[in-house]
Each structure stands twice: as structure tokens, then as C-alpha cells.
Amino acid sequence: MFYFDPMYFVFALPGLALALWAQFMVRSTFARYAKVPTSSGITGAGVAELFMERTGLRFGVARIPGMLTDNYNPGNKTLNLSQSSVQNSVASVAVVAHEFGHALQDAQNYMPLRLRGAIVPAVNLGAWVGPLLFFIGLFFNHYDLAVAGLVAFAATAVFAIVTLPVELNASNRAMQLLASNGVLAGEELVGARKVLNAAAFTYVAAVAQSLLTLLYYVSILGGRRQN
Ligand SMILES: [Zn+2]
Image 1 (cartoon, rainbow, N blue to C red):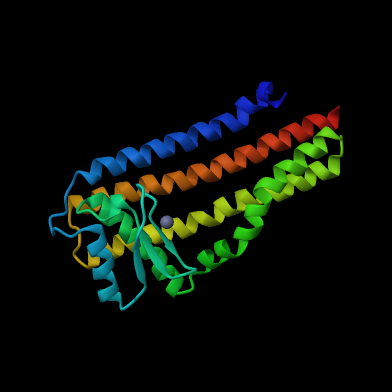
Image 2: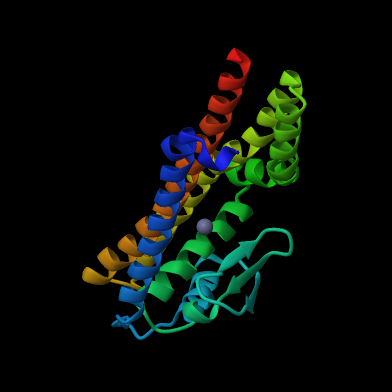
């Protein structure tokens, strides 16, 4: 009966609450600056075109459904722009510039991006095999199996940590591109930074959440060992 475990409230629940709060912050900050048009009149989609021109970097641009679902896919070299990012707003422009930052990372073989890509299969496997082994190990009082599950699950924490430099670096590149190309100025740059900082905080929250979940598992295991 893990749901009544007080340790859940000590470790896992604060991590979950932090992640939900970060989600709320990114949505509200985006909504706020989605209402602020850029003085240059440029749209998010226009920024992708402009930066390709200025940097000489070429890749495909596709439209995808949803809000804030934007991403750059290094696999097929495509920048996927969501419905919320093609508009003329400080928020749209900031998000597209951030994704362009990922495209630059890809073009320049930015090491943390490569590392993150390389560990994805292990992370995907560990995310479901880890908890499975862990609870099977607990159920059958097989301590080593539970530890193996814990180690496999730890891959998700490693992924969250490696994601941090990738995301912060993409946002720094975005701010430099926006300023040096005269896309945004003054208060607009401050707004773009707030949007990107809110997004960055979701990744910090993800690190905290995965580490706290890991600690929760460790606490369960520690309690079992004493029994
Ligand atoms: Zn990103």
C-alpha cells in the first residue's frame, strides 16, 4: 500500500507539485506575452525564415497541431512549429528562436545535445522497466532485483540533468539571435527572456521531480532492508 506511505508525501508529492506549478508558470507567461505583438511585425514563422537567411543554416519547417508543442527534430532536420508559435507576438518569436537554437546546436554538434540523443533509448527502457523490476523485487523480497530496478529508473534522472544545459544553451542562443538581428528590442527582449526562463524552469522542476522520485524509491528500499 504505497499510496499511504508517508514518505510519498515527503518526497514524491513535492516534486509533482513543483512540476505542475512550473507547467502553470510557463503557460501563464506564454499567454501573457502571446498578447504582446512585436514592434517589427515579425511572426514566429518569419523568425525561422529570417534566422535561416542570416545564419545560412537550412532545414525543413513544418506546422504541427497544438500549443507549445514546438520542437526541432535532429533526426529529420525539421523545425516543427505549433499553432501558438506562428503568430506575431513576443512569445511566439521567443519560442521559435529557442527551437532555432536547437537547430544550431545540431549543426554545430553541440555535445550535450548529442549525449541526450544517445541516451534516449536507455531512458525510455529504464522509465518503465525500472519501476517494474523495482516493485517485483519488493514483492518477492528480492533486494538485488529492486536495486537493479532503481538503477534502471535512475536513467530518467540522468536524462533530466543532461537536458538542462541543452535547454539553457538553446535559450541563450535564442536571446543572442533576437538581439543581434534586431528582431526584438528593449521591453520585448525582457518579455522574451521571461518566456524562456519560465520554460527553463520546467526543466529544473523535472530534475527535482526525478531526483525526489528516485529518493522516494531509495527510502522504500531502505525501509525494506531494515525489516
Ligand atoms: Zn528546447
